[in-house]
Amino acid sequence: MNYTEKLNKLIEQKFNYVPLVNVQTFGCVQNENDSEKIRGILNSAGFGVSDSFENSDIVIFNTCAIRENAELKIFGNIGKLKALKANNPDMIVAVCGCMVMQPHIVAKIKKSYPFVDIVFGVNSIEELPYIVYNWYIGNKRQVSDPVVKTDVVENIPVYRQSRSKATISIMYGCDNFCSYCIVPYVRGRERSRRPEDILKEFTQLVADGYKDITLLGQNVDSYGKNLEPRVDFADLLNMLCKVKGDYVLHFMSSHPKDINKKVIDVIRDNPQISRQIHLPVQSGSNRILSLMNRRYTVEQYKEIISYARQQIPDVGFSSDIIVGFPGETYEEYLETENLVKENGFTQLFTFIYSKRKGTKAAELEDNTPHSEKTERLNRLIKIQQDIFFKYLESFNNKTVRALVEETKPGGYSARLANTLVVHFKTDRTDLLDNYVNVRITGKKGTVLTGEII
Ligand code: SAH
Ligand code: SF4
Ligand code: F3S
Image (cartoon, rainbow, N blue to C red; front, side):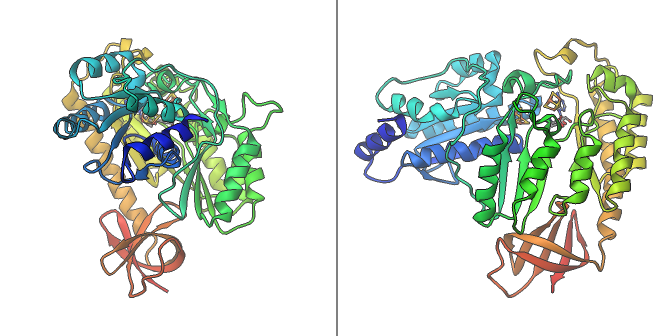
């Protein structure tokens, strides 16, 4: 008997109801994808899935380490469970994900968060039935440093909450070691799933009616480097696009040093691939890019964008930017500002540099006051807001196709293939998870408004 079956038997004896698991995700889509696997594994071991921690028998925090404020927020949330755990000592509190791949964080949990029962690593998800089984048979607290694993495990059950939107991890880990970034340390070395496994998952999703499917990896453009025979990302896209169906295929993230003309050409030739590309530039200064170990120049970045715009007239680019990298001068910040103004990103995710223990950039001198960094961030946000509002206005009176994602009072919220959101009113109640055509009539905050046709 495997541990999923063992755990299933055990909880049937232990509980006279279906016990519940609540998984809370912090961090990126990759983490959300892991959470769906965690729910899937425990669901197949007999647990129900709950949206709230209050009535749950297992609460799992799937954590992120990307910036200090992410970690502070997570500790705040874990702290809130203390009283709940005191009232219900049988409730399991578990913490997993990127944050606990760092020994100093595990030490802090050990010392200051005695009510945390279990810590497990990012690539130990499939061991969860074994871990939980052991907790129940009395082998109590399991809080030790998780190991970074390097294998690719297939056939993990996935519990998907949406009936129309899904993500597929095509690769794990990262080898890029951008000097500011913790991901390669907590997620381990880059490894790709075999194309046939991805194709199988993708084909099933399309057959199940999923319409918005996103391929995930820290750097999708380097997909396949460890595979034999060699397959690259463009080949994978081509292979997936042969699957017939009514869907939009997204991917993230691309890396400017690895995205190439072949990938752009595949997007051009396959209308089911989203015309919205997330291509994080991080900075508009070549000196800072080099210190960041990004391995491209602003000129190379602009070149690939210009090629894409030539080939795919309706292509849009979104990006990530870090301001206040150690030693970034005001002039270097202005170069970023100019790039943003010049390039017209459809969406921008802006961050203040956060020092991450163990990374190369953590050793660099950083004399810029935090108030100055905040000012740079706010300026950039303001510039982007104006660009974004003009972009939203460019949709006025256009008719767009959108996938209905959520009910709203008197109507719905739906997402365009370019990831913009539109709200519309209607008396119909049968539209969830379906495509609709909407005529855009205006905007409200950062979303479009429209009427269904
Ligand atoms: N693999 C993706 C990004 C993953 S992290 C890529 O390379 O594009 C998402 C974003 O978080 C990064 O693009 C970067 O802008 C930001 N980020 C990463 N580490 C950071 C740090 N130490 N401080 C501030 N922002 C950071
Ligand atoms: Fe981090 Fe760079 Fe890897 Fe992205 S590519 S996860 S920023 S090291
Ligand atoms: Fe994602 Fe955060 Fe980990 S951004 S990869 S969950 S450090």
